[in-house]
Amino acid sequence: MSEGYQRVVLTVDLEDESETSFGFFAELENLLEEEAGEYYLISSTATIMAIKESSSRDHIVTLAISVGLIFLIIALSFKSIFVPLLLIVVIQGAIFINMAIANVAGTRIIFLGYLIVNCIQLGATIDYGILYTDRYLSHRGKSSRAESVANATSEALPTIMTSGLILFCAGMVLSAVSGIPVVALMGRLIGVGGLISVAMILFVLPQTLLLADRVLLKKGAK
Image (cartoon, rainbow, N blue to C red; front, side, top):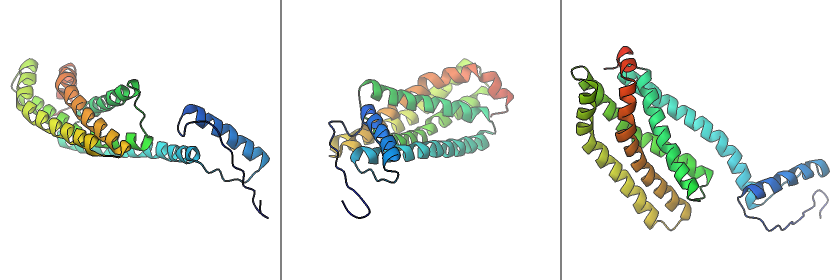
């Protein structure tokens, strides 16, 4: 105790990061606001909660800006609003699948790691979709839909597979070599995410382009 402050040490048997811990600290903060007014709460969980609140805001802003810029660049390149919309949906689907697999497997991911992996996977793998779509539309002017898909696949496959495997190997090497668990986890997520994006481009995007063929041509994409 001092003239201006009192220090209270409270020991609880809880994990640093869990829903139970967050719920407990939320109740503790409500109690302190009612009883103490001004207070400082110092602990690992309190720090994680502060980072989580800040990261949630950062995630929304970062995702909105990155997606917006990518949308604008692709829209100007293809002179179409529909093409960037399709590509972003496909890659965001790959990111969702990547994170869903990690969650189902019981992998604990810090929110900052999720933010980093999201941005890297989006920025690094959307080029696969741009390449494939460009090949498809270039053939579509003189070939049928089925022939355009077949030609786009044969032309884009080597580049997409090479780039995807490089990203996968880089991520898995980082995962295997790094002695920092968080860094190793992000490396694994980036590597696996690269393969998932490749699979989405090769198996989902062609069907999406076929279904949206009339809209794409109507919008003037070339």
